Length: 323
Image (tube, rainbow, N blue to C red; front, side, top):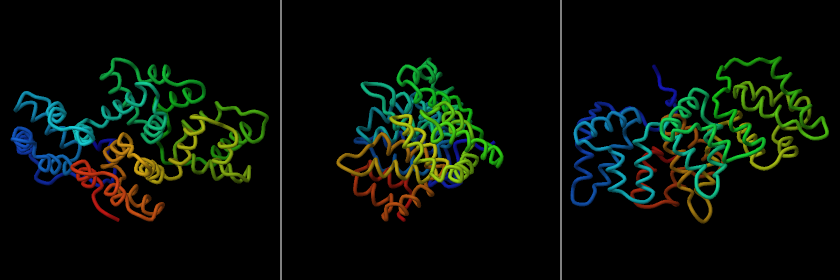
């Protein structure tokens, strides 16, 4: 059965002639030697799919009695360490850990929460929730509830439940009906009925929403984005705008997130690592194309000018090419 974590537009493919035991041994050598052989580690881990890396992890544990991620943590440092550990983490566990990081410490990183919960299909979200509970012995919903509030919380919980319709079939009558409900809930009344926005935007499939937004424009002579900006505010507004963006063009939404992570004074490695790793077998080729289209330069060149050392080398390998 095909994994829900793999698409057709990724940069990383199954390595031909793959042998977990050969790779595990080469990794062990790279770590055990005098000074770590980062080049060897990078070339193995960026040229294997996550499913293949999981087999290496298993083989490594069986042969050496150690967790590969612990050895990587002990041997590497900084952003490279975070990126390499991310590569050997199962995708659902990786998302669970990213969600936990978004909610812990002094502030909540709402942008990360929004990005993960809006871009993961329902089947993935269900796996992430299970992984979250396995790792933290607490439900994802409980943590979201205690870290957020109001309409923002309600919408996040709906997304975390993984209840969005995944079918590709669209229903024109439903689109017309939903568009009218959205219009009546916002532009066409005094005050806004936020629950209607949450219900429709968090539960309908993306193709269905696209059609709904077209119908909305016919009814209100306005883009749904403009209505959301006019009617709502704060993180709830950010979340709904992210959903609209994803429904219209998810690779473009993620290209914009990468652009924000790479521009300005500092690099946002938390976001950069997450998107590069989590989309490397899904749609990173499309994200690269959108990046080039929107900003006039390639994602590859943006990474090159913003990062350095082995961390840069690893990201560029995941990126897979210049555009």
